[in-house]
Amino acid sequence: MFRDTQSDKLRPPDWRHRRALALLHEGCRPSRHDDAGMAELLEFLRAVARRQGGGRHRRLAERRPDLAAAYAVAAGDPARRWAVEARVLAGEPADAIAGKHGLRPGTVETYERVYFDVRGRLAAVDWVALEVVRRDPGKALAEQEPRVLALVVGFFAGAQLLDVLLGGGDPVGRAELEKYLAEDALATALRNQAVAARALPADAETAGRLLRLATPGSTGAGGYESCRAGEIVRRQVDAMLPGEPRQPLPAGVPQRAA
Image (cartoon, rainbow, N blue to C red; front, top):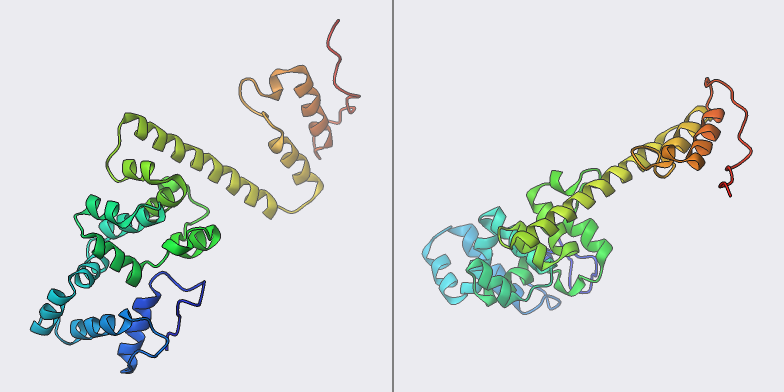
């Protein structure tokens, strides 16, 4: 049986929902270690499982509107669910989130309690990144699934850029978002290059080529190839590459003329 409780700092965000489903499946009652809302959640899920849309379910929804509405968010439009979760990761208060998505503040609070219990653990950056966001590290943000994109922007960039991503903001905000995504694309490309370089065998042939690739400003206008000192670096690297025409190693960087 699923036994995660509030004492487990690594519990998944939806641990209460998982716990209630485990109790339902095993036909058990909440234990003394469960919090006060577990019995209510279990009763609601039992009504949903027995007669979806039946009278008992409707009566329970009338008595617990926030629980029923939170369940509707979890089971409904994925885009709205991801947006709510991204705003939680951005640190927006429940009433602000509710106002942006046509919900009651109590519904957002209930959704967090049952399905997305992370607000008290936002300082655990590694846990949020690895266990909540679950980004593919080999892809730039623009290539990620919509859910991952929203969660990353909310958690790492903040509420302002998240508003832009979700359809709001002004031209300045859109430019900032484009800049953020471009910087992430560059960082991802460099990270992938580093991983690829580490995967190469360390021999005389690859070492020289990696040195050339890793030299700052090795390509493009204004790079080291455009200056005399850079020419010395290039010749030093080329002289070490197997199969290249052997050149004497330069003694050093020429001195600037007086």
